[in-house]
Length: 459
Image (cartoon, rainbow, N blue to C red):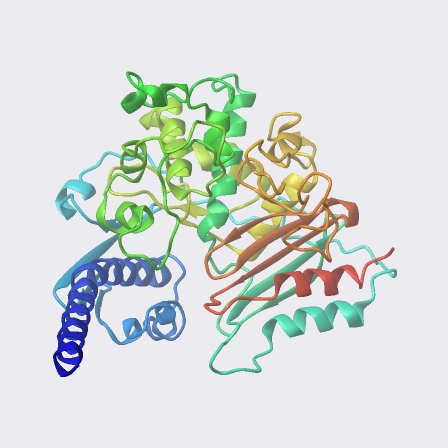
């Protein structure tokens, strides 16, 4: 018996040693990369203080907020050191920050990029394209209930699980009826969208469909697939996250495809395109940042490098007044269309309003007719009616509408959402758009917020 317990003790020591070794090998590259990229974007894109980033975003991993991070304001770079691993992110004007993984800084800085010019101020232009608000009275809105719902989004009742709400903007019938910002933030503050960027990428695909340059039912033009079974994957299947490619969308498993793509690869789309098929195309729903980045590269191929870096601005952001929006590229030069966009809270509200208004802004059609309907129709592989074309849906499973993400909201609600609880919720039946931005590592009650706002609206 003693020999048995001695064996168990040895086995436990071996397992603990292996576990420590696994953590030492796999976590530092992820933590260092995340620290460098996050700090760079928050400081140089959002104009945040280094300490505020340590206090909020870098709390995502234990100990990361105390990591050795060097912010160089002279050349606008950030280096992060976690145990044996160092990572560096660089800032470029109108491109934001890029994490270096495989290419050198000199190589990335030497890329020829024609960026969009800084937009002109538009405070004198009427909402929604501009910021001039000509408020009409809406006496039917219960201002007390509205204010209470918004106040709860900013309240902090548990210091160990802070909500860290940065902004809330509420639109009813196209008007701003509620707006509030966190400490140190204001109307024009650029705030991270994370996976809300996927919905922007979908809109850009739609604009190319409108121009006759892409067909969602056609095979995706991916060079890596031209000679194998993946060549039959369609653009529609990429949009509806049903490509069948092998993928793990895990933020806390260091060996997951997600982290290999984001922290260890300079070419996000190239990494995703290299993955093998795991399911028949169109048969299996798998939420995937990888396939969205393939779409981003398809956009680049379609418009060409000469126009690519201006394309989101000229075709989408500027026409609808998203004057503070910015998408960051990876080191290969392709926009990280799954995750890396920034915009003001009002800009995110403008984007939601574009969809509420069926792709039209100020009388100008931006998205093709029928695109919003297509976007908010669940893909065949989304068995619970939960996902369309890069937007999340509240429809529920066919014949069981009660099985929904947000059961207290109408079935026609849909939303863009991102890591740390970034939200654009559109509720057409209530003519409502709700934007909530923040840094919530423990979840945020978005359904409660939107339900509270709905209760303040006319029946």
